[in-house]
Length: 226
Ligand SMILES: Nc1ncnc2c1ncn2[C@@H]1O[C@H](COP(=O)(O)OP(=O)(O)OP(=O)(O)O)[C@@H](O)[C@H]1O
Ligand SMILES: [Mg+2]
Picture 1 (cartoon, rainbow, N blue to C red):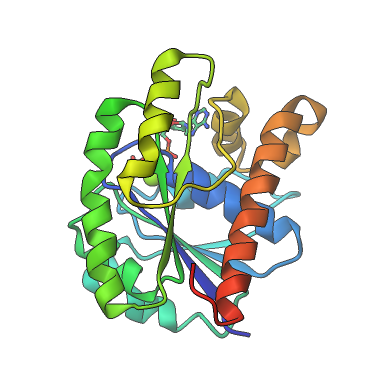
Picture 2 (picture 1 turned 60 degrees about the vertical axis):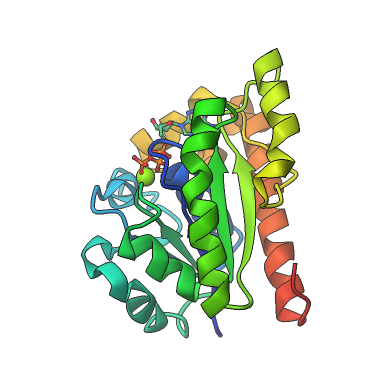
């Protein structure tokens, strides 16, 4: 077993790194995969998320805190690759931090959550440079934007979505809409799947995003770069 490593990064605070990391890791865990979340953010949000789960229904992935490992995150992560199917690194809100750069060195896939608003897009530009720099050292690194907190009914959102291809990183087809259940999941230490029928649209989004991520990583394992 050699884990596929997913780094969830964006210097923009609050873009959805922890939400995407935990929902993705939890969805993979619920599918029977062995998943480790590396909480590489000194804020420790992912660690708190998993710790909020009830004893009778623990979060379906392990979480370790490596926020203090700084530029050595990739070396620390390497120690776990034999023991897991997937390792998801929840990055801190800084592109130039040694933690984010180190995570990109060991990642197979960088996921960049972005909120489709002009200010958020501008604030996210630094991560593109960080990914480009990482590709020089980590040739196989793929990258995808994940549109998060989407409110597709607004014309502003539509305009920003039209501009997104110019960002230079391809987009995942699945977009996550702004939904209360994404927030509730963190409070109860769960994924959207634990909220039953009323969460069906959010579940569909997370399942779709997870399918895309699995396919991207499978494609790479078969030797094709994306
Ligand atoms: N799709 C969504 N729908 C509704 N709320 C969301 C969604 N995605 C994220 N949120 C909420 O937005 C806030 C920021 O999300 P999150 O903590 O995942 O971002 P982050 O990028 O990890 O932040 P930080 O940079 O501080 O680490 C949280 O309160 C989270 O619950
Ligand atoms: Mg976070």
